[in-house]
Amino acid sequence: MFRPPIFAAILIAATSIQGLEAADKTHATFSYDIFAGGDNIGDMQVQIIKKPQGGYQILESTTIQKSSNWDEINLKSTANELYSLENRLISADKKTFDHTKAYWSKIDSSGADLWMSFSEIKNFAEKEESELLGFSIAVLGNFIPQAGEVLGLSQLLFADTKAVPTSIRLPKNSHHTTLANLPKYWSIHRQTLPAEIRLLDIETTSITQMKTEYLGLKVKTLGGNEVSTNHYTLTSENRAPLNIWLAVDENDVPYIFELQIDNEKGPFIIKRKP
Image 1 (cartoon, rainbow, N blue to C red):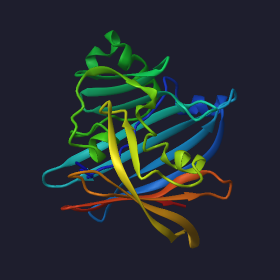
Image 2 (image 1 turned 120 degrees about the horizontal axis):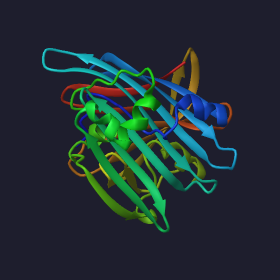
Image 3 (image 1 turned 180 degrees about the vertical axis):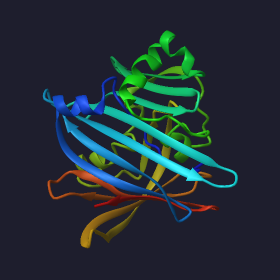
Image 4 (image 1 turned 30 degrees about the vertical axis):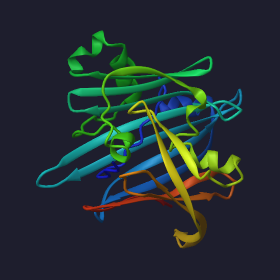
């Protein structure tokens, strides 16, 4: 299931990241290097945005470049999750592009449920007729959308579930958190995770139940400085373990310091950089 040639976490609202920063307050920014099989294949930036009315937003932008005899990927993507003051998911939005295709996954709140949808546009020539691409292209601005068969984080970490055009409704209490919001979930639960956790995957409109194991405190280094992290493994049947190191910065903002999956092609790693 965990098939990690690339990590592309993709969540974005219908306005540009620059516009969001202008209207709201950037609370924290974290930058990451992405490695696959020992090669540096890209980078990612995660921003935590405080909303004036309360709550917060998680924004991500990812660039992936990988070339080999059998695989070539040049991916740029963006992402967004919006949470209430009570730390409840309000909406989420994922977009990525594949040469002539665009993919969009979206979540909206409706009473006690979450409405989730996934759509695909097969040709950019359709953009004038499509409400999807109409604002997707405007949001990405100078991004150049090119990729192989990559849809995003979920297709890489939860890759035995193929995302297809669909629309479903799920109860809000059917999941604990998303992977992007896991540090916040961990923080508000006194820096602990339950023995079993249900992760909501927006891209595949599905929920994955995983067992968690705490492996203790681990000291990592960042720019020559030591960082205390909490090491967990998340596992599910017939899937490679997901190792994740959670930390808290100097302003008490929780974040993912490192994420790692091992498979037959070697380790896939996302690691914070200075």
